[in-house]
Length: 557
View 1 (cartoon, rainbow, N blue to C red):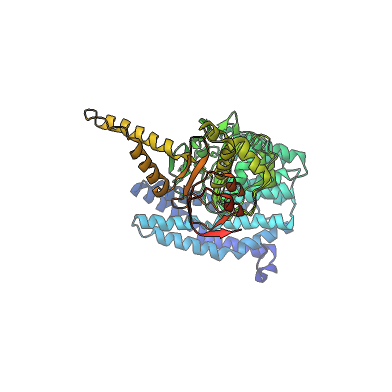
View 2 (view 1 turned 120 degrees about the vertical axis):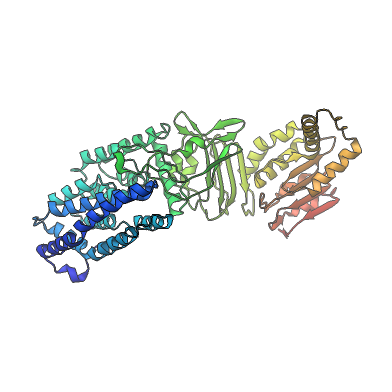
């Protein structure tokens, strides 16, 4: 950020004089006042966040003052420009102090006071000015000795924004000279936000030494994240970047106190609720400051009865939600077996690297903005697929092969005719859920009801098993009146005679009935209600046995 035009003509001594006058007139006195206010705060409240912030602010004041004192006699032309930037922001610093003093002088230590203090925390003027100076160094490619010394001081700043800017400037402006310093930084870094912004600069560097620094950084993060493979850490950093853009952080805080008491000790407010073996983050009120992804420990996904998430240092199960973009680095997840992508209405394309997931067995989509099925037919271990919500004109042949080869198997085990089972398997892919045999479902529910009754009322007589007529009536009730269900009926020969698919609050977004529906020559009943416009194939005319047809919002091909 260049200095304002009215300051461009200032020589070094004039700029420095302005700074020193302002510092002496305002900062030194204010420093003592704020120290006294801090003592009073500690006596009257146990709320540690504003206390920590003011403590940190005093350190920032000292740091800025020390820098000005250290370079007071320098004649370096590059540094003179930096002084102009600082001088141009003096008025902002003064206003900042005035606000803080005014708030603290109220002596009324209420929650409202603390909220006002924390508002100032988010606009820490000192750190912003230092970051602007460092960004100017990078932009102008300053490379003098005094600039290097300045960056050496700021790389260990307690501020993420200052520290991150310093590391980036060292990588770009002093790629060789800063190697040893960068290695020390990588060993001590505790902030995900800093690592997230810098790892690609290290990876894209032409210097092998920078790649070694990246390895140190990734290994440090891996140490605090279940010893994950360093390449998979790259994906986590990219994923974190996408969530950060959307202000949906899902990383909790467990601090590694590399910087002692200079770092915050207080975790963000994130509530984690387990639901059916997976994790839902309910509250997004704060952003993380350290390198520990505690949510990984909680993410357990039930796949084929096997709990998977992190295994031998690799991510094997992953649920992605509310993303606009999936990072290319997902291709690094070499052991990933289960991937679910849902509620991503603005996701319009997938990364090419998804084709690198050679161990992927389960891939589920729900509610995305994708309009074409990605060509992932070459994934050697892919078995199970869901394309719920896709607006398809045609179903790719490789998807039909997956339906016949894998999705039809459990229907065949339930005595469904092999050819009809393939149609059910294809419907399963399109709706993202398996279809249940309605008769078997009714019987199972009846058994469950009897067991529950015996537990609740052990002395009462057991409910009589329903006769065939009652069973038939219950089946019809389930088939036509239940919501959020996926049923089929079969005759004694195993041919499908009925299909009922109904959605509950957007649980199913079926938009296309496959042409293969015309192969169900014994189909008598077809009932579909999902709340979405539905495209019917011409093959519907082949259903000569059809007696009942009820489909909402129909479009014909």
